[in-house]
Length: 159
Picture 1 (tube, one colour):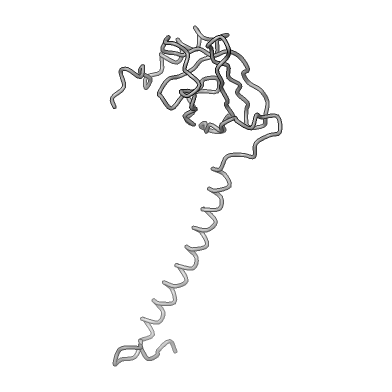
Picture 2: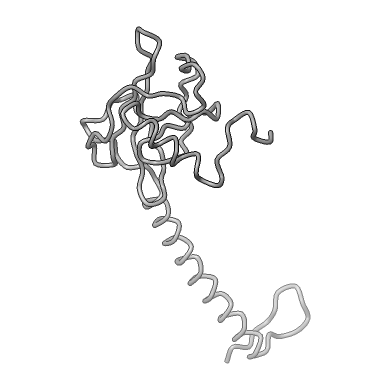
């Protein structure tokens, strides 16, 4: 049993070859199932959540270590920046004016492109490398943020 003619050859398959072949095919089938399950779990767990009804349509999903945040910013008539940040369930965490960490002028409307990388629950990271902090917590947040080992002002970063 397990022996049979090997197509394209002039010999028969031995029992050992048949057994090896069936074990190998069985493992491959088992691995396919595991890969499919892991892919599905990662896709479901790693994808952004459904936008809650209370979150603005223009808000951008920003991944964090364990969760994420919805963020949207716009320029005000007086030349400042206003941002709203929601948690994943749609609860507002911050809704106020924001200031640039680097102390420079407020970004223009074209420069308000949110990076998608979380620098913290209340901070907003822009594609330009600039970071915006809420006005109500600016000095405290600035001290904490600049105390992080990995942060350097955009002018000191290696390109």
